[in-house]
Image 1 (cartoon, rainbow, N blue to C red):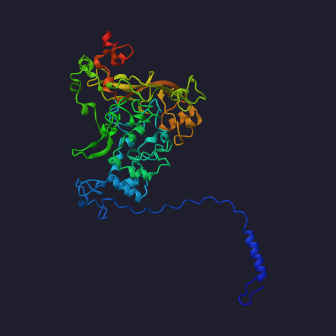
Image 2 (image 1 turned 90 degrees about the horizontal axis):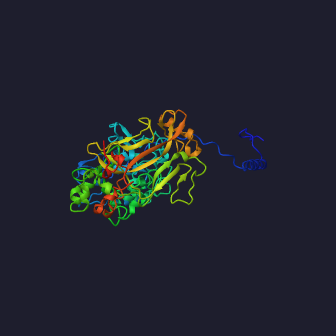
Amino acid sequence: MRDPRSGQLRFPTLLGVVFMAFALAACSGDDGKDGADGAAGADGTDGANGLNCWDLNENGVADPEEDLNGDGNVDVLDCNALASGAYETAALHVDFFTDNDYEGTRSCMNCHGPVGEEMLTNAHFTWEGVAANITGYDGGIHGKNDLINNFSIAVPSNEGRCTHCHTGYGYDDNTFSFDDRNTVDCLICHDQSGTYKKGKTSAGLPDPEVDLNVVARSVALNRGVPTNDNCIFCHANAGGGDNVKHGDLAMAIADTTREFDVHMGTDGANMDCVACHQVMKDAEGSMVDHGIGGMPIHSIDDGDMKGCVDCHGDRASIHAGLSVQQVLDRPGHDTLACQVCHIPAFARDTSTKTEWYWKDAGLDEDPNPPAEAPPRPTWDKKKGTFVWENDVRPSLLYFDGKWDRMMINVNDQYTELPVVLAAPTADYTTPGAMIYPFKKMIGNQPADAGNQTMLVPHLFGGKGGPNPFWAKYDWDLALQDGATYTGQTYSGAFEFVDTVMYLTVNHEIAPKEQALGMDSDCFDCHIEGAIDWTALGWSDDPVLGGTRP
């Protein structure tokens, strides 16, 4: 009926009630499927920058009066400077990260901004540098990003797995920015809680199980100085497992005894890694930057590397009056580096890989199954066949700090076998060269049969291409991926070639009573099979009449 006042139709009351009941009933069925997500909204505007802890007047400027500790710099060290000049950095970090959540590297950069800038040029972050120690390539930029080895072969196309120990976050392919300080991982070196770890396949991102606030509160303990645990975790696990690569750097060395390393042993000198591998400091003893001294092929000036004589003095004064001095005084022994006698063997605690055969990777079963279960696996479908050894006698070679290294798209061709991937360039005629101990690593790996170039296989993850070997176990496809990613030329025909490389041995210093030549014992070295004399330029043991050209 029509409302006489408005002229509009209206339902009788009863009919209206019935209609509403039907309407409500119609709306009470099952929910339909959710529609597709709408487009992401625009990013919100950046919030205002927070204040630096030292900015006492909140003007955004480093004013001279804010240099509370009087060191000439306005920085984080002024944040908690006391009248006495002492610091309570541990308390500062605990208090801050109790009141504030750790929000990634930017939480560190709020106070330690200059350190972040330093790290952007640090070899631990860049994984490359000026190749001062690669013969023939002085001045070029090289490093882990283009070196070829006979362990996991190469980084490119495999970044997501290899960067498990990178001092950054998110380095999963070759588009990673090395210019963003907020991708620096401060915690990997400065965690003092013992709880920090990265996800194994996360391109360096922290494991989700880690309480980052707990870690952040701990970083200033031990005065912020990295401990052995911090260093050893990455360096001992290089190559894919404990002591796989170096041979003289195992997880055990972080808490070992004098028997296995007189420097690191808790019952010996009980030294930290940073006692020898130091940062560069100025005349007043203040840290210049975060570069760590070592013996790399690049970035050798990153830090301050201490040598034997820096602590022990020269060899003449050390051995004066001892029976071993008679050995050292004999002709030719003046070229022996300290490590030759004081590292009579390496891998004395934890075994190390000395052979790795990639040809056996991808098989469905071990081609040479052992009669009994070995202490460590000798075959893996992903990686092939291995040989592990303990108490390995080092190979001796002349060394002056310079290397021959094979690099992707630089000098990756070979003309003879075995292919030498890394070796000292010096020989007995090289001025200043000394005899040093090395780990000799041999094996086989894929190469281009047509072009005679060492190839980089795509082993892991989706960023390097659609056909990682560890997913499809197809060498040809993995090599196609690797060539596309690196820019290498691949003929389509591959083979496995024998390779060799050498690594320096500088750790696992044995107790002096185990040193070679003690009590004038010549037979520590001058016995059959102890030393490869041809590698030192002799036709045979010189004691037995060996000669040099």
